[in-house]
Image 1 (cartoon, one colour):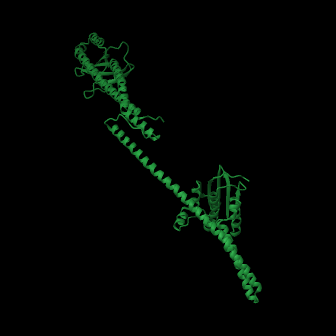
Image 2 (cartoon, helix red, strand yellow; image 1 turned 180 degrees about the horizontal axis):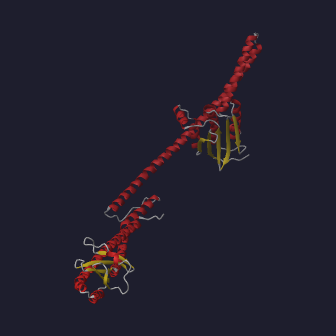
Image 3 (cartoon, helix red, strand yellow; image 1 turned 90 degrees about the vertical axis):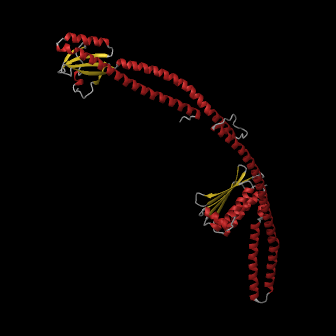
Length: 474
């Protein structure tokens, strides 16, 4: 589809209007001239027929064929538009005519229905074009009739010549109008084109552009409004830049605070884990030793059994405390790395819950990994598996950890019922921030966090974190 600009549309509209007007006027003039020439032709034919009717009356009464023939022949030769003249008797039989040969077929019946109430002119078609056949009675048709055939050929040639002259004049006027239309369209659209160019430049980022040569018309008002809009745009951009800088500074401060909060949280976890492992575990161990000594020295069997039972309870509490200490801050994460820590956590998780958990990784271990990144990966795996147990009915979980384009990519998927928007709303209402917490951990490390429904209908979490310190694949 051809795309036209405003100038071309205005130019084509003006030309189309001019040519339409020329065609309409030409048709009106042609129709008017044709009707006028036909009426004039009929009037002249009628006058000729009346003249012959009045002159030939006596000739016919005295049966002077020669005089009648001489009359119609001279009249025929003196008038170029006369195609033929016929004189008929009172019975419509041909008395004299100007045809050199026999009469054309059907010409006699052209006025077979003529009477005083009908028109005395009829149009007859011929090889030469239309012929106006005029009939006039002689002595009220008691003597006969005179028929004169007036050819439109000469009239049409005259009209055609005049229309040719009109066409030439129209073409000259059209050429002149084309120049005027081009000038008008250019004068109208040039300011608009300048406005478009400036708008394109501003859209490309050059906010210093302005429309110049503003005239006092509608386009000038549009240009003034556009310039004012551009000024407001610069002010708005400056305000937006200021707000954006403030927002960026606040975002940096927010990220810094979150990192500090996570760091404090992990330090506190580490401290509690150490205290549970060192102090509480040692105290329980001492208590268990004391109970065993007391049980061995007990003289009453019932007291001895009670001490053994208490020792077993203390041993179970000791195991729970050690598991809690490991959950708070697994030593293997600091000593052996994130891959080993995830493997250990998944192994313990499978023993604790009846869920099939598989783990695949493209590396044996990632060494020299930033502590915050390692913690983020481990905590997300920990939180994701706990969420599956708490909120879904999944029976199978897949955990993946690969290195991809200098990034660490973690995926956790299950075959549960999936997470819906209503679940997020409910979690926010109940102040459960597990997923939001995972997302915050990822975003402060400049990573990406995506949660979606997998092919099995369950939930799939995709995390990508930058490899801050490039590791060595062992």
